[in-house]
Image 1 (cartoon, one colour):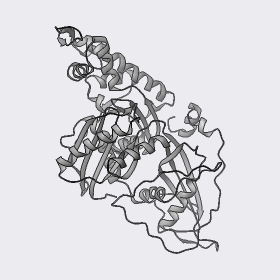
Image 2 (cartoon, one colour):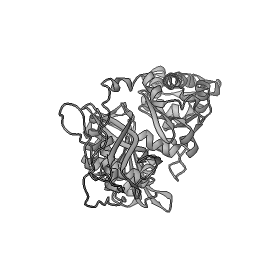
Image 3 (spheres, one colour):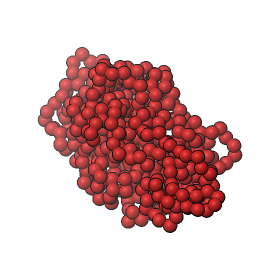
Length: 456
């Protein structure tokens, strides 16, 4: 399903905040405005100073509005993978009411079965970001993508639920609202990026997507068009720049320039003869260093980042997926990064570059992906997710304050219509989950159970 209209993506990153305004018509995404500002008030992907972030968002929005010559009201914002948890969920309801007769399945039935699936043992500090249906069951018929319009007595949904810390979600909402904007959609950033940066075959058969950001590095394992696992390394491009600054005794700004203009991720690709002037703190004259020496500093940090990713993802055999590794994010533009990644991961590696005019740099992949995710949502997924607008997550534990998750409906989405009918009664309660499920989620054995045999 393609939803024509104007869409705005807001990427609140550690090193920069980006805004892209796009017009989506006839299946084409046309960028009509964008802005990018240096971030302040974020640390390791998380908002730590709301006032600073709000000021930067306003500045970036103003840049994009001036280029597009329109006023922005609604934005799609991404939630980072920090402390993201992924778990299966399922719900079941009776469709025909108390009489046991079959009835036609409507939007309201989809809402009801989604509410049933949201009954989970969530800790009070976590909130649901998104819920994505895998398949529906109508009576004994399985593998149904959209059950609406079908006749049945029993409706079941199985899917995937993505949850995150309430603090992170609250701070994102607070910053967007204080910047004078409304949230059109909240999206799990790795999901949006994978749908944009990976081909249909890569999403289907499986691939590893690595976002080399400035503040942190995020790796996502994608299979069967789902993000199955994420890993966040709190080291990113800024760490590389800081290493250069410390070793060469130069300012952070000079170190960033050296990295971008002369650096290689693989030192053997750099020249051992060509020298670069470096402004050294406390000295009047520049010092000369070779490209090779500069690149050795860069390679040491990049190798460390990739090795940690290899250890985490290798333990679940993620590198056996046919799609190999796809790199994107600002540091993906560094020369030699593909070669270094191939050496460490020992699988095919490629870089994804956006093809949109004026934004053909991997640093814009995430923010464009946010827009792509919103514009290409199919109708049944929109109906399922819209349930989060009307019901807070049911928590099966001691009474706590209800979830504060409120996602503003997409402006292009059709209103969900319901008709008077008898309330559907659940025909099967969700099995009570073991109290250790939360801990198991982080263990390797738990991950292998999660994935089943698709890595084998």
